Image (cartoon, rainbow, N blue to C red; front, side, top):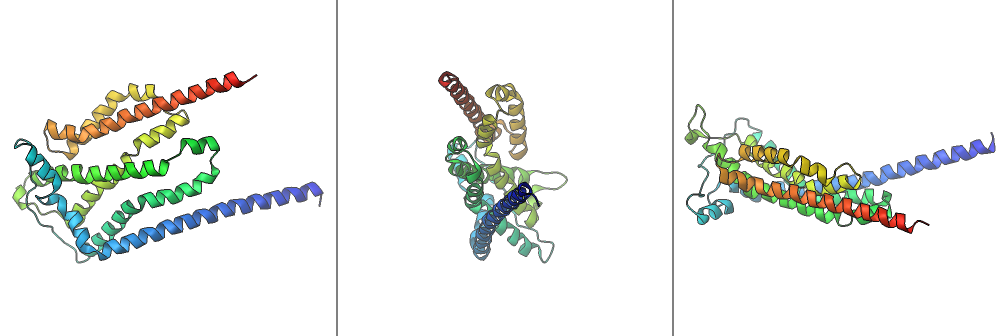
Length: 280
């Protein structure tokens, strides 16, 4: 066998081992994330009283959102109707409890899971990319927590009140939601909101690679306003005040994203100018 062929074979083996090492590292990051998720899920499942409180609190009149708007004025005061849950299958309560425990554990462990994934990605980044991504774990975790809190304390009470009071072929007094569907609604109103709140971070990196510009975001600002108002109208009672209470934070996120994109583009242009000047 030729010497150059031996060198090529050795290079291939090293590359293959390097790839396998990356897979091994990723596997352990995922294993630790899954272990953390399972531990939190088991703890939440065992603490069923706490889980019941978290899930049923938005339908109680002492929920902070209801008290805040009722103290604000009589015009903005609202309460959800009193209702109980309907369980149709013998295993429904048990399976719903398991599913809710896993989802809530995923919400609680999101910062840790994101940190584990970031530890895997970080070594492959360049120095300038690391500087650009400084504080990303804190930023994403904070935005996720803010989004989940917003969904729980704002979207949930408005949505539950509207849906529970909605009458179509049956009186709202007979409202007895299915337990699994109610829990699914709470999850839908909270977890996706935490993901949506990652918009500024997504715009930051998209602007870094040139896929998004502030001009693009400004151009489609009117379209975004219409979409936000439609979403607010779907999850809130049919009045302008509550729709704007839902829409304002989303407007703010969009405007913050425009500012972030503008700064990223400005810094990139300034860096290019400095490099051109420094060239002989």
